[in-house]
Length: 294
Image 1 (tube, rainbow, N blue to C red):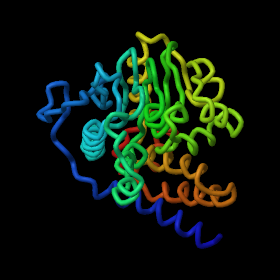
Image 2 (image 1 turned 30 degrees about the vertical axis):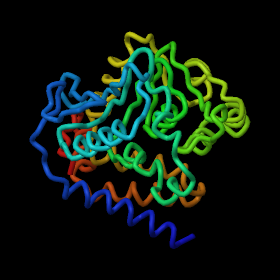
Image 3 (image 1 turned 45 degrees about the vertical axis):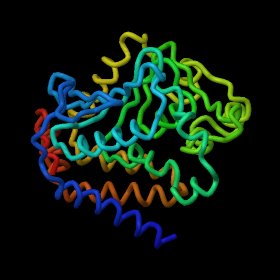
Image 4 (image 1 turned 180 degrees about the vertical axis):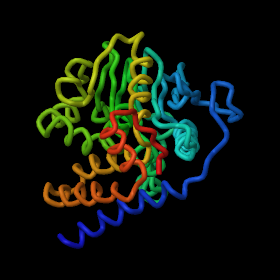
């Protein structure tokens, strides 16, 4: 167990070192970005232009998650992740569908050997690997891979007509990108079993009640509320936000005692940062903090 604590402590130090090495990226994204996106749209939002918005854009297919879309999403996340002007990322779809699932037409001919040897769905993990906080703004359907994609994000805001579900059982298969794992950790075994074994959907209000979504807002206000949340996060040190995000995520990956050790060591690590010193000094001097993300 001591070795695990050492590993967690080294991970925290790694985040600090990686952030210090991260290059400034001058390019700013907008709806007219030089990237020739086919399946997504990107822009920056908020008064400080520090919140990236990625919109899934396959309206005719209800934003079904094809390989091309997931590759573009991964690329956009990597680019925004390197841009020091971006504090948070909002991932959204249309009012009708966040994402209605994976592209079944693309995978219908897959074989077991192809899935194993090609490590099918492995390239879906960029959302979960991204260090900056990601807010899923979910309107309409978030089913199958769409629900799994939302759960890879750090926070879910739901429009009041949103629907969540894991209907893979009706297709003769099971969730393959976290539906049986992340969902169970959030809503508990019984509800996760019910959803995965029946394919039944739940609405936004029930999702909030179960802890799957943190807030429900009118559909036409959803994106604005998600951007406001990103702006609020952006008022803090980006470096410390990333460390805090990793500490919260660790709670799902280890025992309570090891998690507490990791949290304490990460807390201690913040005392090597300029932003921790600035934050506490500003508080003592009764003035706003001026964070430098160092």
